[in-house]
Length: 448
Ligand code: PMP
Image: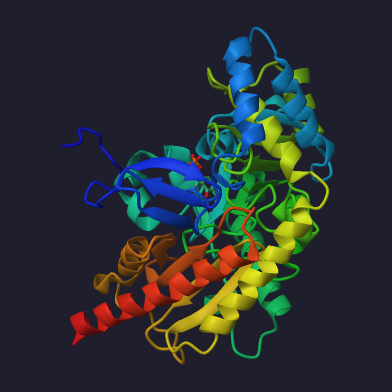
């Protein structure tokens, strides 16, 4: 019997022993195609990339780690230089963490320290969005809004005000254009700032394209431009969380490029070292860096393993592959194939209400009734059945019950490694279609 305290103890977990390209093999020799990039976009370059393995081996052999507060290292400097060279406008500095949760927490702490340093300590309130995920620590859980995960901790977490997500399928009114919907939803930020008192608000946090809470949900055109304008008008810092959607996943290096905005902070994790090593990062603009360095001189956050040399060496190798000529074109092209195949297979499906996403980050939203968009009751556990039947068929996917305030529908997120070839996409969508059919039959039998 396992003595590990797994996060979902009741789920039967096969033992993974090998990864190879698009595949994972378990101890019994069963092969699974990875439709979820190793668990939420890690291993975005597939399993067993030789350049990354070599870079890790080399760095461990030279010097695995030394505290980056005492010595900098070549991979650390090189990684920072790569990330800042083609960052969104103004993001000139990067602080390393070990995870996405820490990257978001670091951004929030830096935002607060910035206002303290510039003599405006009244600014301490954070605004987030419902239906979002920003990490599993108390800060991430309170800024994010995954109801089931945050509820036990609400009384001991920082209080955060939440506005509506930009979730066109559920939020756009009849007769409203996507642009009008985007403006209306973004304007909730202005109302929230005015309600809380503009002098007290320090930051707004959002995922550029949401990852999991209600599936992969891209913003409508113009939404983030309006958000940026509102933040500028009231002096509120904009934190975009691209832990899930950043670094190539949406077909461009940064998801926010496609929305024409640059935030004050940009967070990454999964795509930096593609899961070969744990590492996250917070990019920050020069104004914030100058205020902290020119003020008290040091950022008060940071972790022992920030800037870990071996993690940085892995990340350098990954970032070079991402930036190699043609790589992002391949991601865009494969993303188009994925979207087209999902539409071919599911556009007429009686229980697929929406097919959405961006690049290699797509979602199917399953509903009981396409006309009314009514979800299957959460108690039927449709998403968990899809997950199980896909796994039985040798497909790793991510299916979960979506939430805004409560259950809104079952979502399947499809985000294969970025190296996927067209035939891999065909296999993934065809296995998914079989898995969904089995799960729906099961649910119907249970409901009858
Ligand atoms: N932000 C987003 C958008 C995420 O998707 C995640 C992880 N799923 C996190 C933050 C937290 O990252 P980690 O699990 O590496 O702490």
